[in-house]
Image (cartoon, rainbow, N blue to C red; front, side, top):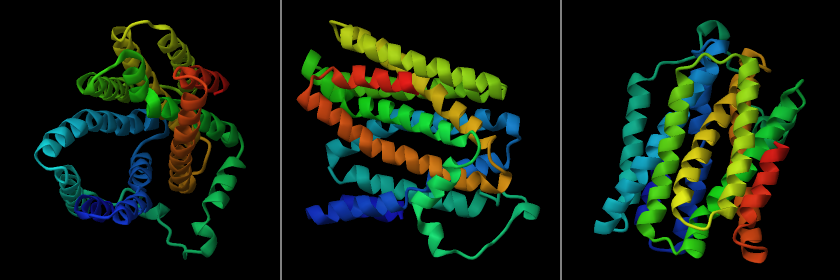
Length: 301
């Protein structure tokens, strides 16, 4: 599905084809849910935070290499980045088919019939939120992503409008974000973190991101933004695996896949809402408003 969406994105010559390609790619966007469930299947409870952090490492490396590859290919042909993405996705499909074994032990495998109710995302979210101590964690996840993804949406516009940053400077900020996330989660992946420590790590990283957001509002020059961007990227890289690990310890083994799906769905929803609120306050309040509003959301989380 992702490969088809990228192929249409590269070959389409009408606006409706562009929209269709994004819809297909979005519907096919459950890969991370399945990957997270696979990792949890093969990890002991005390190792889940470490192993889930590897997803962030891969994502951070991709955030560094992807824009660089897209820029190089796009300079030759505007269609080339999307076609290359389709080709890479087909390569990943072959890797999954040939080398990825079933992660769930046979004694835990079940094949219940698919029900219409299973296709209702609201019911799945409500079921997970109703479990003891899980609803609050899902609320923290939403607030964190609402703040972080909202700020991320306008960060490039902010440095362009306030500091007249050029394409290379904006690209460097993206690279720093990817490197800091990958580095932080690589460190986490090698640590043994108890549940109590995971809760403390999540709290410290959320507080730190709020402080950094306020600091970005106050700096008079562009160069401190680079350091602050690296700090907030690293802190966000600590928050996600800590929250995922805490949540995975609050459900039975057979519900872990459903939990990963719900958490991914909530993150995607916050991506939409984050872009809306951050863009609105950026336009109608002040360019710095997403940062101090985001700081408040981090504080609530």
